[in-house]
Length: 137
Picture 1 (spheres, helix red, strand yellow):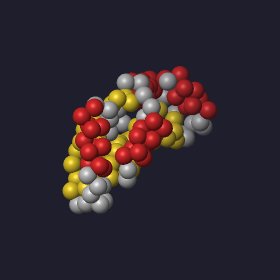
Picture 2 (cartoon, one colour; picture 1 turned 90 degrees about the horizontal axis):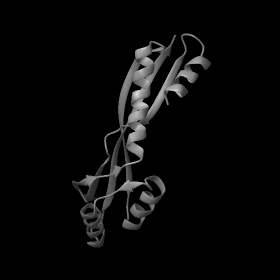
Picture 3 (cartoon, one colour; picture 1 turned 60 degrees about the vertical axis):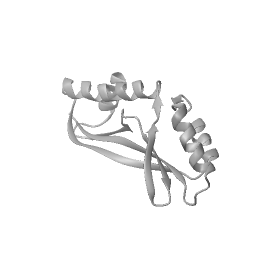
Picture 4 (cartoon, helix red, strand yellow; picture 1 turned 180 degrees about the vertical axis):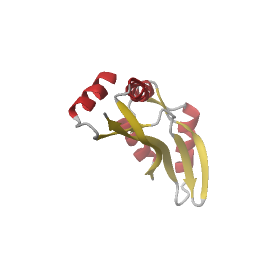
């Protein structure tokens, strides 16, 4: 990953800006909404995705340390995925987080809330992303 960032820096003109965007290494929270009530059910873990994200952070830190770039700005931005059915939640997991680990008690809680049939029931996946602006020398 460091090699890819170094190569990108070589391709960008001197004094250019490289934007690096990736998810945060913090597992996303799973929130259940029922009407106006919101509660955290748990977190979504991924043994394959999070090491990759940590490697991406380390690669940025390495090119910063080497002095190839300077950090102009680092922002953490939250984003939310809203899912309005249990089947939709299962499909989303299979498509987006196919290597994830969802604790069984969290899955059961989500399923039971949807089975209760309360209007306005939804699952929110609360994730964070990192965006860094790097000045290339």
